Image (cartoon, rainbow, N blue to C red; front, side, top):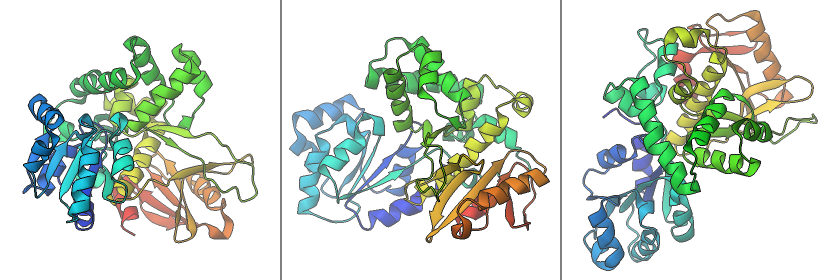
Length: 387
């Protein structure tokens, strides 16, 4: 098993809360991580028909087997579990008794917030981060990393991306959407998914997206919500403070895994990716994903934004830290040009005196401070998360 940064956060939270939950996209490693971090606990998969039938027919007898707690995998399969756990943990508040894993889109968080509020710590596990992959070394190219993506099976089992992603989309994504939304026409959904990939890094125009997909705006909104709750896409909101300027109020759409986005776009080789017109947007999405992973792995919410106003000022990423604003500009090129530096400087002017030194994350190897901009190589992205 590849070491997961979230493990440290899980151990910390399990020392305080009686229930810890892990949610995230399918195949991100939730079950593997839970069983590794809580190896002494009994493991029960509620996708096992025999276990699920036992739980439904005799919940008291089912739970009596686990007086010291257990790992319940795919917990949302038995919605009544959350109410039963509420009674158990109210009687015995020992920390770290129960560990739940499951999928947000099927109601894991809804069940938790209704029955276990104040008793559970919720964490989110995305596919492997750059640090977890150990992929910043000289032998790994950025295009290879982006093309492969970050799902653990692609790295631990050596499955080719071109073999894995078609099965992933068919087995998990389409099945999930069919279950949640009762989608009958999967051909239309596949077209919708590819159109979303083509809008990676762009302002989300739901009306145009629905029109091109040949569906209603309501259906597009619902399908996008399922993709977001499945942790396949992320809508990055505009920053909520305007500093006296007219702002763009539309979110930007990003795929959280560059490999999935590449496959949906028909990009099958590094040479294709290197010349593809969306390479810059794919790199931008990859960087945004790394920032989100770092925050989730630390047990925090994303709280990331972008900025664009009517005067032409923009920042690809923006977040608050210690009462100030950190702007981040993202450029996929390997050479740091004067235009890149000027873009970083413009990003730094957004918040005036409240802005920290802007960061410029780029696709090359250079790292230094230049003309008031901190230049950071993609290989060294992790240093930004440990400050």
